[in-house]
Each structure stands twice: as structure tokens, then as C-alpha cells.
Image (cartoon, rainbow, N blue to C red):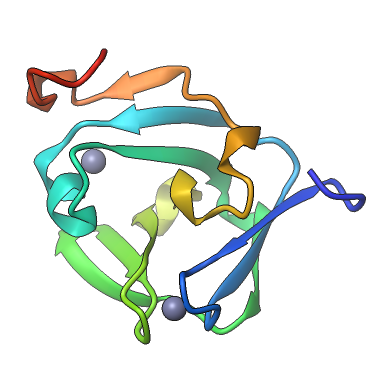
Length: 123
Ligand SMILES: [Zn+2]
Ligand SMILES: [Zn+2]
């Protein structure tokens, strides 16, 4: 957390930069196959924020609608995965942990879609 009480992050090339204000609502793993496809990683980890507490300080993500009401944000320049966003009703925005400048600030406490977890992944 910086002096303003926020966490900063962005994509690999720096075209998209964000600031997440305050502590996340939750931090957790997602083992679903859609996240796996979107990231190319065996599992995803997210810091969950209210949309109002996330602002873009440089650029904006591009979006892919992976299923009705679900948008996945990424950098259109370098392809970095950035967000998982549900339809506006929930007001939640899930930031991929690896996009933060200091991901060690967060430790996952929940696990979603455990039924799709790869058998060799630690729970
Ligand atoms: Zn980028
Ligand atoms: Zn997922």
C-alpha cells in the first residue's frame, strides 16, 4: 500500500495502469477453465474490489465477453490479462493478482470452482 492508501499495478508494457483504493473485499483463487484459457496459467488469483475503488491512471483495458454478463479485461498492446468483471449489478471488479506492482501485498483466502482445479495444484 502506498502513502495514499492504494495499491498500484498495470500490464506488462505499461500502456494500462491502475490504482486500487484501500484493501480488497476478498482475495482468492479461481480454478475455472475459462480463467485458465484467458491467462494461460494453471489457475488465477484475484483481488476483489468494488468497481468504484478502482481507477485507471493510464490507458484502459480492452474487453472480451467470455460469457453473457462477464467481461475480461486485457491490454490491447501487450495482451496482459488484467480484470474479470461481472455485469454492473454486482459492482465488483476482480483484478488479477499478478498485475499488481507488489502482488505479495495480498494473500488468497478463498478458492472458487475447486471442482475444476488441476489435480496437481495445491489446494
Ligand atoms: Zn500492455
Ligand atoms: Zn475463473
